[in-house]
Amino acid sequence: MAPEISNTSMLFLIVFVLIPLSLSYLYALGLEKSITWSSVRGVIQLFLIGYLLTFLFGLRPIVGIPIMLIVMITVAGIHAAKKGKGIPSVLAVVLLILCAVEAVVLTMWIGFDMISFTAEQVIPMSGMIIGNSMVAIGLALERMKQEFRQNHDRLQAALALGATPKEASQLLIRKIVKAAMIPNVDGLKTIGLVQLPGMMTGLILAGVSPHVAIRYQIVISLSIFVAVSISAMLVTVFTYRAFYTKQMQLIRMETD
Image 1 (cartoon, helix red, strand yellow):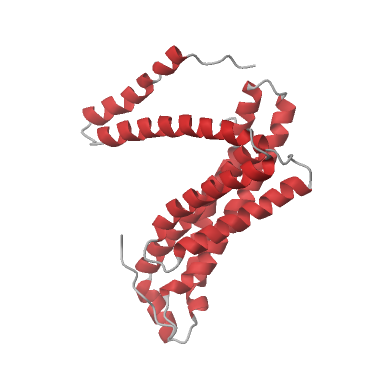
Image 2: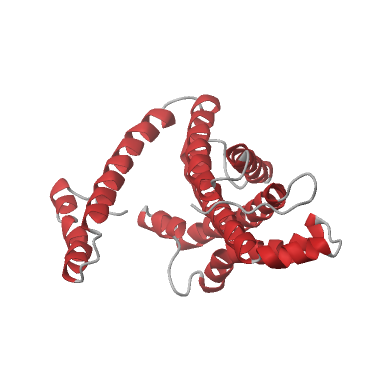
């Protein structure tokens, strides 16, 4: 069982913030304000979420779990949709995808008796699924705008030769989905070798047997991989048509 971290020990964590602050000042990076604000904001958010989770864990699972999932999906959807600024109805598409992915993964977990329907298990594991899906969707949207902007002339030429938007965009769609999936593919290759994953580390610190911790880590790692793959594919397939008019003409999307 890991020892409880005292308030005094927590205060010494400020040293970890002072190091990047010093480097930013030394090399004139201009990140002092961002580093300070991000650190303070992150700590406050974590403390607040701690109190919120304590409250939700005290509610019936059928009440507490949906409340937290709605909050997480909404925040993740808004954040990911910012990467697709300018794409019509992008927020609605992102929220729909996140809901669908979470529903599929959660159904598999409960259906195959991998976890029990309790707030202590569903909320932390769902947070990892939603968070990684958010990142994948954001990467896909950002890469999509970049690819369509850089390949505008090539796409115009393909359309002029009689290609449909789907045919003209097929190569770009593959590149976009691949780029969004690469971080997770690389992570799976080195999992357990370069670093001990977060869930496994947390369970071991809590006193759980490494063999049990490994099983949970395998479940969450493969679930994240599936969620990321589905999220990247769906957001690309559902939004690439926004770059074309109904008359199959290419739209030059404004840069951020």
